[in-house]
Amino acid sequence: MREFAAKIFKGDKVIWGCYAILWIISLVEYYSASAGISLRVSPNFTSQVMGQVGYLMLGLMLMLAIIHIIPRTMFRLIAWLGMPIVLILFVLLFSSHGVTQNEATRQVRLFGFSIQVSEIAKVVLVAYISEILPKGDKKMAFKKIMSLTVFFFFLILPENLSTAIMLYGLSMIIMFVGGIEVKKILYAILIPLLVGLPLFFSSPYWPSELKYSPKSKEYAQMFPEAGFVTKTLARFTHRVPTWYNRVFDDEVNENGEPIDKFSVSYVRENGQESYSQIAIARGYIPQG
Image (cartoon, rainbow, N blue to C red; front, side):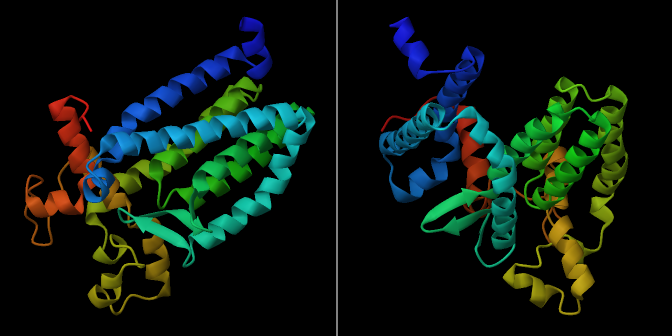
């Protein structure tokens, strides 16, 4: 049995172990993440979870097929062929093909499927770093890796701060393991912090035009005199007040009054956050 498993699950056992742990965690987290969908579409949680299991099994079969069919030398093509694909997906994301949920545009809808562009960018970036690092010239490798990392970071940052930070951190970890000077890595971490933190803490004092998404229907009515430059800046800054409020939990309405997070209207408009808090408070898995 062990020999059979070794033939099927080729490669590092630790990586497969991490995959199994994440596989199980995703099922547990699915109850919280899909609570709003389940309550709107069907009260049967079991059918929702079985659908998630189906997607996970499909992903496992694809992984096994890739491992057994595609030679290892072909993986380096991901770094080069994946680059134009990611750029095209980002163009689609910022156009009418982008899907906006919870005031953020993170997915592209193509052929009936929702594609998380940042996840594909993450795979391409890791493949690119793995291709560049072993080639000897660490100084040039650092410049190339940082150029692409910063480029992807700013493309993802306006709509998905956590993924952008994880992508940047992953790049730093791989460079550390790959032998890049620690001093350069520390500079790459400290400089964004010194620039970003003052901007973050000053966000409550920004003009209102920078706190709303220019893609929303209300923006043109609220700020009819906003020019091209203001709208462009707002595309990058409109999520910052949301991040600030999540850290300090001091959200207020248009009248400057604290928002009642227990009101029916707030729960309906912020279902994911509200249902996750309910799941934490009640502490059990619903039966369906």
